[in-house]
Length: 124
Image (cartoon, helix red, strand yellow):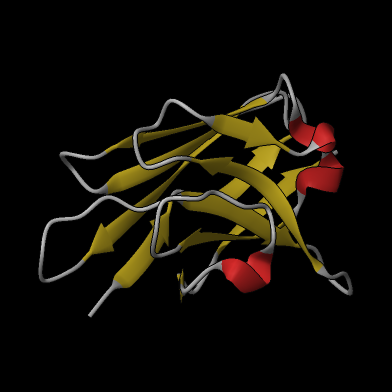
């Protein structure tokens, strides 16, 4: 079994910061390409950031570049999303995702494993 669990969501004022965590569990130690997606009320799920298995290769949606940082700790099987300078438009349910293989992607339908999501609310 592969399971993902997000944590760290909450309510924060505009300009503030949050750190989301995503723990991945499996029966055999393994690293995965991973990503963060988010879904705002009444909107489609959209890409936020992704990271390669090694953690070296990263990419971000234009809307979060310079504000969010994705990272991972393979030894702890945990991925992070450091969110700074938060804006009200960042309000959404944030999901972590992982996929088999090596190639990274920004397409949600390419990911195999998903967490249940954690709510991030940014007040103005």
